[in-house]
Image 1: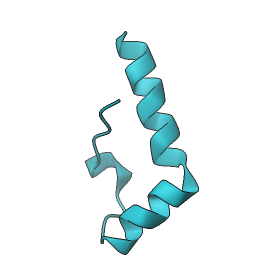
Image 2: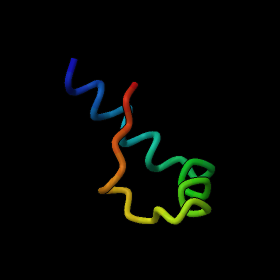
Image 3: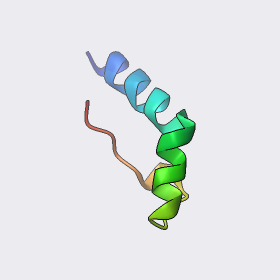
Image 4: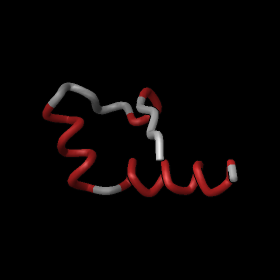
Length: 37
């Protein structure tokens, strides 16, 4: 359901290796990132 998708997105965006990978690609604002489970 939508709540689970939102929770999944939050977990991924808060995962340090994911954030570091995005930073290496020039993306630091996680509000601009969409995560599709």
